[in-house]
Length: 132
Image 1 (spheres, rainbow, N blue to C red):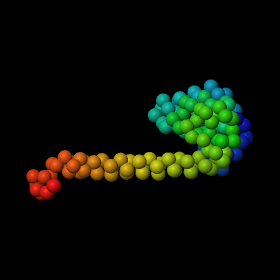
Image 2 (image 1 turned 90 degrees about the vertical axis):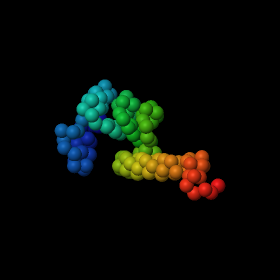
Image 3 (image 1 turned 90 degrees about the horizontal axis):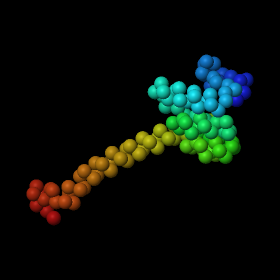
Image 4 (image 1 turned 45 degrees about the vertical axis):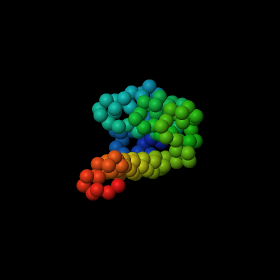
């Protein structure tokens, strides 16, 4: 966050350790922190709403911007939370996991369907069942 006092208050509400809080950071420092986390093998989601968050939003694996923020942050992010409510970040991440599971399930069913249907259409089972 930009303001140390606000960042610490939010961290307390979320039960985050204070050593994970980065406050009053310049845009370059935010990008460096995102790169540092990525270099250590982590997937980074960045939430921001201002011009100073845009470079870090673009660098992160998933950039989430608040719809009430600056337009450049919206352009740099992958997902826009229209209401501007930070609680929607958890909802968006949960929803994306559910959607991704559904995509994988649909892929599996389509693979099975095609593996059975294509040989059937080609007549591969004709010698066994002698039907057309």
